Length: 188
Image (cartoon, rainbow, N blue to C red; front, side, top):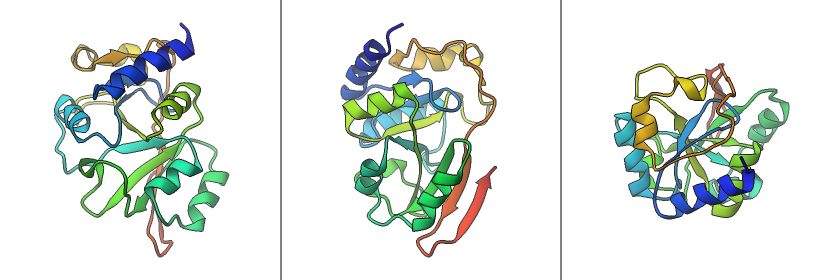
C-alpha cells in the first residue's frame, strides 16, 4: 500500500470531520482533527467514554507544540531528548484546540511523533491529530490490528491500510509537567 495515497485518503476524511483508525508510533489509534469539536464527540461516542476523560493529541514538531502551548517548560524538551521510547507529556494551558479534548484541570497530553504516516498526515492537516487507543473504554488495548473489535472498525469513517501486521504491546510513557516544572510519572 502506498504511504502517500493513505495520507491523502485519511486527510480527506479528516477534512470532512470524519474519524480514522490508524497506526501510530505505539498502539493503533482512533483519530481526528484536534480542533474539531464534533469529530471529537464522535470518538467519545464510539469509545463509550465520558467526555471528562481527555484524549491525547499527536504533533509533528516544535512549531505545532508552540502553537498549542504558549509556554513549554525547558524540562519538557530535556525529557523528550532523553526518552528512549514514545513519551506523552501532559502540559498546562493548551490553546488552539477543541475545548472537549482539554482535561478538567486545563491540561493536554501531547506526543511528538516521527512515525511517517502520522507525521505526513499532520503536515497536510497543519493541525494536531487526536490519538486514543482503538478500544471501547474500559476494554483491553489491542496490541495489533487483528485484535481491534469489529465495532470499532465499523464505527470509524476510514481504516488506514498500513501496518496491519505490526504488533505493539506498549502504550507510551506518560509524564505530567506543571508550569512550575514539577515532574510526575503517570504511566511508565
